[in-house]
Length: 239
Image 1 (cartoon, rainbow, N blue to C red):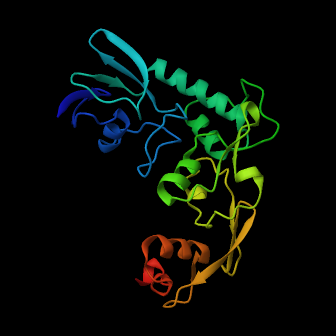
Image 2: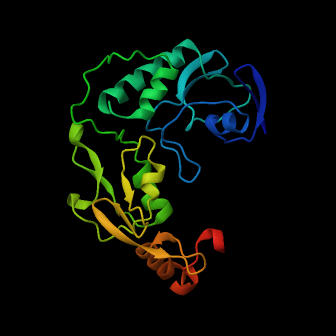
Image 3: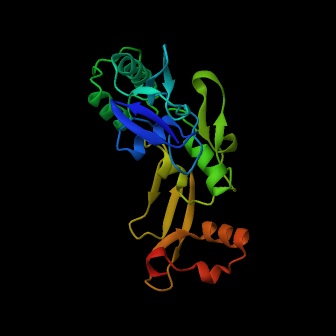
């Protein structure tokens, strides 16, 4: 165990833990758009920066990737930290001027509504955090989406932007997306779901009679686990 200070609070943490995780465990809020407990951190969004001091050395670090150390003093809201976060938000807003999530965060941090940088006319909401790609690959195990093109044209999509035969329609990518860029639509009756340009037929729970999961997803789970598809045809509420 190591002892450190975060925002003038004495805290004990396990050696090797990252600053962001320790802060969360102690109720200290550090904003982030690319961090989730299900996948390893990458520091893509750069909003979780903090000021860390060890001895006479002070630096701005990415808290989701920076491990705690004995005697470390962390300031999560110093003027240097807030200036970096505001700049990052202004850059993200220029790329994604239509993101309501970014607008809310900007308002909370006092970022002026008037853009500092020229906004992207494509009005996308993707900040290229790779959360959806990593979730599809590491958590779901399908790898149905990825990055395409380079520079300002870089974006997340299915291979060649065509209908993906690999996608199982689970919706994990839409759930994990921090800015609402990935759209998933379900009909009023709930019998179909559309995502990445493909429509999936939903399965009815044999107990309650509600649609609860894409049939392709259940087939995939059955193949991976060896559990008969009939045993998977029950929603979580009825198990």
